[in-house]
Amino acid sequence: MPPPRPAACRRSLAVGGLGLAAAAYVGVDHLSHMSPSLHGRLQPALWATLALATATRAPFYRRWDAEIRAAPKFLAAMIFMLAALLCEAVSVRFVSAVLGLQWHRSTAPLPDTGQWLLLALNERLPQAIVGLLRARIITLHHYLMLFIMLGFSALFDCIKGPGLGIATRYMFTMAVGRFLRTITFLATILPSARPWCAESRYRIPEHPHAWAQKYYAPYASDPRAIRRVILWDMPYAAVQDYTVEYRPEWGQMSFLIDILRPTAGDGPSWYHLLKKASGGCSDLMYSGHVLVAVLTAMAWTEAYGGWISVVIWFLVLHSAQREIRERHHYSVDCIVAIYVGILLWRMTGFIWSMRDSDRARRLAKLEEVQNKLFRAAKDSDIDEIRGLLNEVELAGLAKKAFSRHVILSFAASMIIFTLLFVLLTFTLASDG
Image (tube, rainbow, N blue to C red; front, side, top):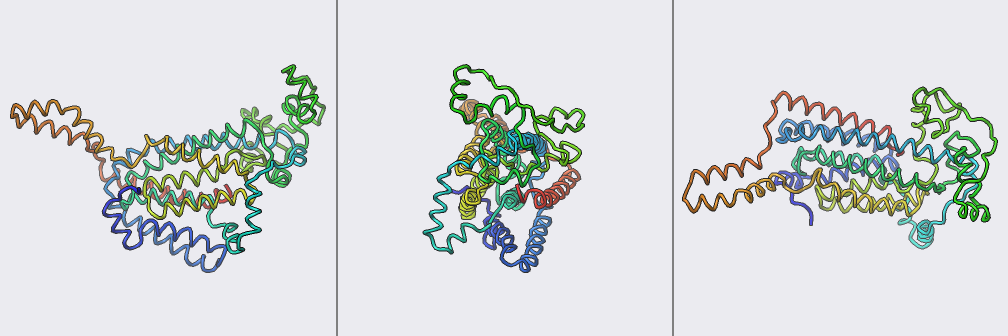
């Protein structure tokens, strides 16, 4: 059952609403593949309309106090998210480079029954449906933008404010998901579903790193060697004598050299190297794209509901099958990402939820003073009853308001920050 919406949002739904705005955004952006000229005219008009509506509504928003109080937690969640992304980027480069280029060339992709199923459906389904399944309807930056639209809809009372509350939950949940993903794909290195990926994307040594030479390569394919290492439970093979690897001067970050395995053409610093990590060239269990899509769908379902949430879930499934179809991931990566995203979102409801926390505080206070109320009523003590009821009412009120100058400054800063974030999303997140 979809969550109830305030009256103001129901009135806005009569003339369009958040759902139609989200659908218009995805539809107009998809025109870039179908009619670039029409897309070039409609997209600026759509964004100008949305920006104007937001700027017009912002001065009349009544919950800026709550937004300011939510800002420190939001910033902390962003820092946590950046730390998770940095850890993930280092780990992606490590699993892509540690076994060497020869391993990527010679190791076949894993058998994936999901890929078999999609190929079988291509033979049997009408070509119009197959074309729809292949279409790039929605990508990573669309899901991020859909969430930004959802967060800003708090200005129009379409979702429960503060908008930074649900944004904090979204960022924190995604950061936890990214850390869990990093641990998962570091635990076991899986071959990419695209065997040519490493050779076309990276400059890494042909041979495996000394760690892999000692602990993996001698026992990778020879059954006798595998039985021997199981029986002895100790590495016994010697490290082979390969060419000395390139070791740049990274100062205090030199400990990353063995992890990242840079080459002379990778740029002057470890940061330039990590910028090229992209999606990696070993299979990354589980799919980060699908995780973002699921978290966006969960946020829309809980905060807004309605037909648009159903549409977003269908888009999530479409994105998942495209990840498998285009062999960016195995089927298991997408399946695991879906249930991990759902479970993580359910576990972080303590940060923000649709439940009325003010009402909950009033009920808790009422339960606390109910015995005193009964005694006061029995004694016909009207003043005592009035005082107790006033305590209950105050328990549900927001904290002391901020000055108008602080609120206006914060509102302007948030709008400018979000616009900059949108620009960065378009330029940096389009390829994941």
